[in-house]
Amino acid sequence: MRALLIFPGHLWRYRAMIWAMAVREVQSRYIGTLAGFLWNFIQPVAMIVIYWFVFSVGLKVRPMGLFPFVLVFVAGLIPWTLFNETLSAGVGAVVGNPHLIKKVVFPAETLAIVHLVAAMVTHVIMLAIFGVLLLAHGFPLTIHCLQFFYYFAALTVFAVGLTWMLSALNVFYRDIGQALTVVLNLWFWLTPVVWPVGMLTEHQHWIAKLNPMYYIVEGYKMSFLYENWFWQKPPLTLYYWLVASSTFFVGSWL
Image 1 (cartoon, rainbow, N blue to C red):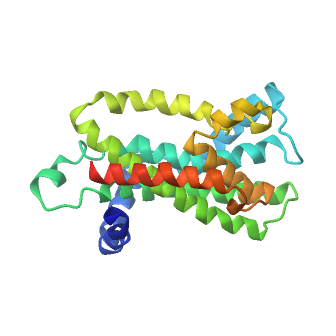
Image 2: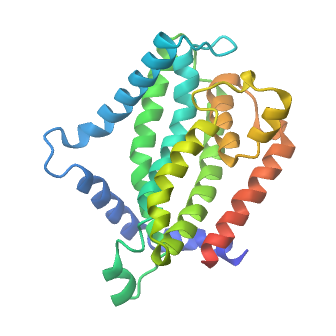
């Protein structure tokens, strides 16, 4: 509980440092490239086009309901990309900054936040692209869209806690950093980003809900497309927060 209480204070106290390090992290990705910052736009658009072509044109996947595949897919891809980028970069946060960890009094817990803030650049860009797609398909933005802030906060707690946990363990077991890529690829296909939950049987649906990212991905879809509120599913909400808060506290302790 103490970790959760002091966490907002840490963010505020080190906000300038976190922002500066996040900006440097984003800039370092594109050093020496001709397109530079434009790659933040090119990569999400390319990913969306590739998946749209493969599943919508090639495999002719049709989600249940009124919404075209590209909208359902992108709504789920937005939170997953933030989660994936935060973990992929954050797992090496401690071993990649020994000069900060060893030689100065440095709040090591802020390194996970740095990678989260850096990943938010892509997150904001994808939200803007999704907004254009919604309007282009004739679907207006409603008050339910504001609910995504809740799911973003929920994802932040889980992602930061898991990043703390993995980055700490990666100091002693470097295989974690290598295995994470495999785990995230498998995790992606176990999460309803590409495939619709309507294809699952009742038993499979129950198992799928054990995946914490199911709650987040479906939550973004409910916010932007299906217009349902998070409090309409209290058991799933309670389960997610039990998992997310436990991960946060264990990660903080590690």
